[in-house]
Image (cartoon, rainbow, N blue to C red; front, side):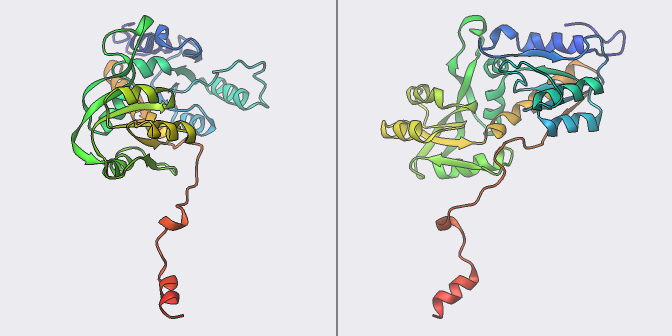
Length: 295
């Protein structure tokens, strides 16, 4: 890590070096795109904005607060593009960031497997202890307690229904909220969690001995088949909400390592913005009750 204390300033290069050391790019999946995306390496950084998604709303926020660097979880360029013209979605963002002198850095699947990483922060929100990886890391990231997801123990046994309420209270609020699959009265002692989309790890969750598994983006058929096979109960949360807790951990580390201001974005960038309970779950209005009682 570059020592910036003597010159009393921090550069993009300093922060990229530190982030690369904490979340080595070699730990990322082969299909992933992590590391620095844009920005002058020798530019001075006094304020950083940590976000889950680099989207127009968080770029607006970065410019409003005067951030010099955005640290994002999700890559802006996960798939190849043939143009950065300003009439394209991603082109507009890049042009705005460059004009404003804002650098962009991404830590994605390399942050997912890190220890501490994305799922550690999620597990901490739920009070889990005695953590171990759900899917231990292989290859460059192997060892050191690294891997995707975490399995831990709840402070005390609670029912699935109570755990669902707890998750809704502890995780960042979204329109989607939290939904669960399984017997509401099932007692949960051991919980597996995974920040982000997690249905590819359903079989590991089933073999882990966990009583329940919490992740994002669960789909109808995999969930149905998982439960029919006797797998643990499932909790489905918003993708953004499952990864937002990690930003606090990254921000705290950056503040301790560098003499800079670090802001965590609480802008809800989950694409689902409206939710209505089914009719059977809605409270009965007094007028309806009066009509039923007095035909």
